[in-house]
Image (cartoon, rainbow, N blue to C red):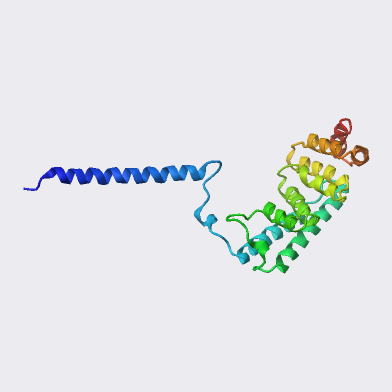
Length: 219
């Protein structure tokens, strides 16, 4: 007769081992998800230079189409949109003229954002305003937020016109009904551009006039 005790012991040990393995896997999954959604496994694969080039080109081309289909909300914003569109076109040319073997495309796993693309351009040449203007274009397209940093960096390079952050703020408000005028006013004050901003705000046409009047009082 077979003694059942050793068999029961082996079964118990196997079940215990399975529970331990499952627990470890669950803990690993929780740690990987801390701070945000779990990254799909395919996103952790290092992409080739050609894959990154193709991705960035698609993103820039989509942005260009979006900007072209979105009329400026105010007459004076035409220049703002023209500068943004020109930067995106130059970004597309940059992608096409930068070989897949170039060190520019050696980027971290999953690093596929346009923000990272712009950062790389600026790492190569901090005075290359294409990276800043592509960020501005992305904000005009997505209406994500008022990005004071890009305007400060343009100002530091001596390439900022005060009308641009003013019209970008109105564009954001007219598209989302969220007023970031406070951020704009703080930026204008910090850069000591209040006089020029008052002139731009005073000339805002149509529906923008009432909005502009509130912010003139705060400058």
